[in-house]
Image (cartoon, rainbow, N blue to C red; front, side):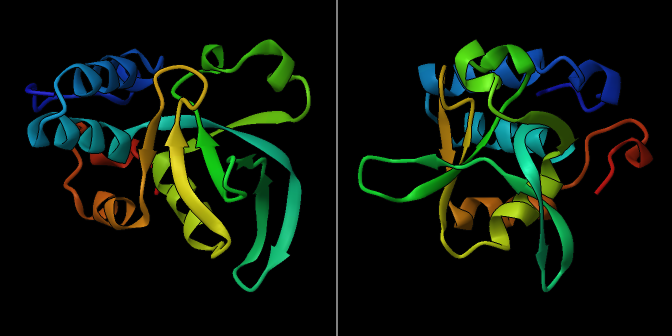
Length: 149
């Protein structure tokens, strides 16, 4: 994202995020990854939710989890509702939330492995160490108040 003037509206459809992820897969450089992470910092994404759960931090959405072949669980996050296969989408409610809130969901669960962006299409797994960097990145939104934390 070379343009320093990004609006919440320009990120809303998820097209910018998908394009940056695609560019990263085609050319996996540090610069391409930083562009994806910067976009995620200000993005609103879609998360499959199966109700709520009571935690030490209060009542939180209970996300659907994906189970990997090795038995580990991962948090799926989507750039747009179209990224979910219909048969998967039918078993929960889909909730939009700031990506920074998704990081909080993942950090609050020690049983979770990676957070995976668009796991059924052009998947981008993000480890906890990378997720910890994202909230520290500066917002690139024209009006930083547009990005809820």
